[in-house]
Amino acid sequence: MEEYKTCQRKALIDFFKEHCDCCFSVEEIAKSLCCSESISKSAVYRNIDKLVKEGSLQRIAEEGSRRFLYRYADSEKCSSHLHLKCLVCGNVFHMSDDQTNMLLAAVKKSSAFVIDSKRTLLYGMCEKCR
Ligand SMILES: [Zn+2]
Ligand SMILES: [Zn+2]
Image 1 (cartoon, protein in one colour):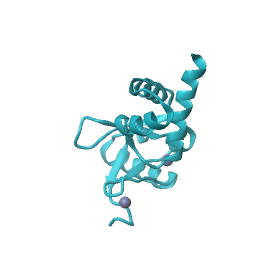
Image 2 (cartoon, helix red, strand yellow):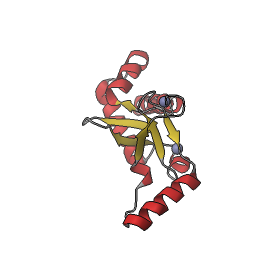
Image 3 (cartoon, protein in one colour):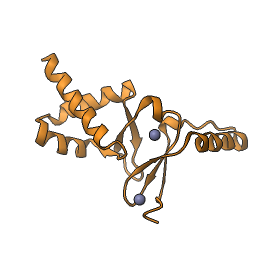
Image 4 (cartoon, helix red, strand yellow):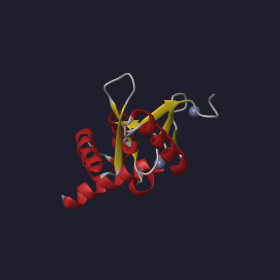
């Protein structure tokens, strides 16, 4: 049983690693995993919850809906910068650490607000889609 759980977890992580620049809803994840890996939707929910708590996945509130989206968080690499999501192609881009620091410092200075870069996603249009 333990082994079975580990297997599901691995399938999930592999899925996110493969698409590390995209965000997915639980429905989308379940859809693509349940066919190939025979994982139940409730198992997907459970595992995702755990991975979010562990910091392997980032939970993002989808704009204009109550759904949550998830993306793979390379916890070491991705906690130090902001992410930009293109509203057209859906790709997520990694802002450079320098740019992130500049932006966070500017906001902090002008409005005394400290942005949580780990939980913030900026929406817009990427170079290709503009
Ligand atoms: Zn990143
Ligand atoms: Zn785009």
